[in-house]
Image 1 (cartoon, protein in one colour):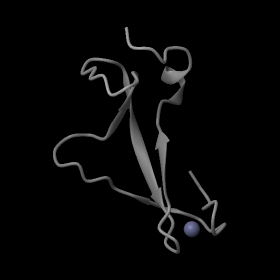
Image 2 (image 1 turned 180 degrees about the horizontal axis):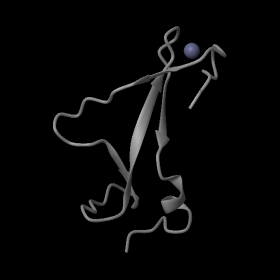
Image 3 (image 1 turned 60 degrees about the vertical axis):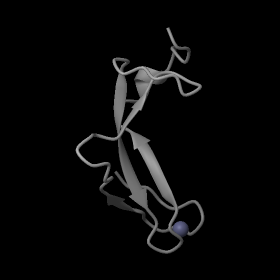
Length: 71
Ligand SMILES: [Zn+2]
């Protein structure tokens, strides 16, 4: 996957996300409601080595398509 920085138009580098022992997961649900067992998607992070901009990419974006409310 190649992502270019929107500021600098150079290729961003993939980096690890350090959150201790836990995976960094984007979950369904809004307003900070905790949904431990809701479906989630791991994130990949890309950083611009010039300006420091970071982009997160969800590995499974399709799971957010039609359920944005907390049920
Ligand atoms: Zn940049």
